[in-house]
Image (cartoon, rainbow, N blue to C red):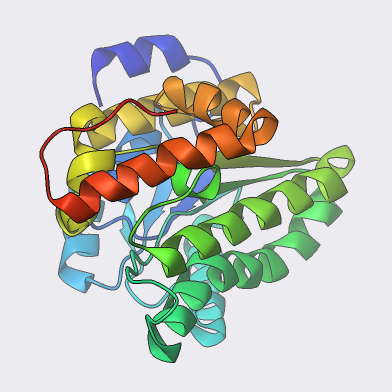
Length: 275
């Protein structure tokens, strides 16, 4: 992480905390792991890509716990391994995600994968973590939702729908347990320069690439927002305006999104103004 993050977050209570980051072998997850470690946290690095998880853990002085972070058995194994290493989990970053494209016809397997990874991985982790956190009266759940959970993602119905589900679950956790010491954060970036952005094709080129930022910038904003106690973490400040427009002028917002869809369909390079 940059010196800016270190200066802005010094003394904010991250040091010494036990942190788990899923999907941390690359991209946003790796940047989050690096950022927490730079602040003195003890970090468990999870990823399906075992070599990448070990490489990140070695680089930051963390502990690699490669494996599945979505299925019930994999989540239980990850949390057990993290507790054995850390003693207690203070922060759980449910960052692993599946960028599943397609429309209503994406097929049962695609929809099931998106649901399992983008929503149920969060539910299963919370099921494992809540008893200890509620007994202790403290715990922190960071859900990587994406701006798709606040808005939508064209050409990727399974992704957009399940990211809305991830946001809904994060909201429910916060509304239900914040008086018992649970702090929940929904990380909602737009385009980020990762392998996932590279795989989004024409829709990503139109919607995300023009304002894409580096993973390190996402991690910096995340830690700053955590320190401020903010539920919504918005690395792209313009997301708030789009979200407000969606809520207060839905037809106008949908017209704008449909114009973007037409741009994607036409294969032109020009991005129309968002309505």
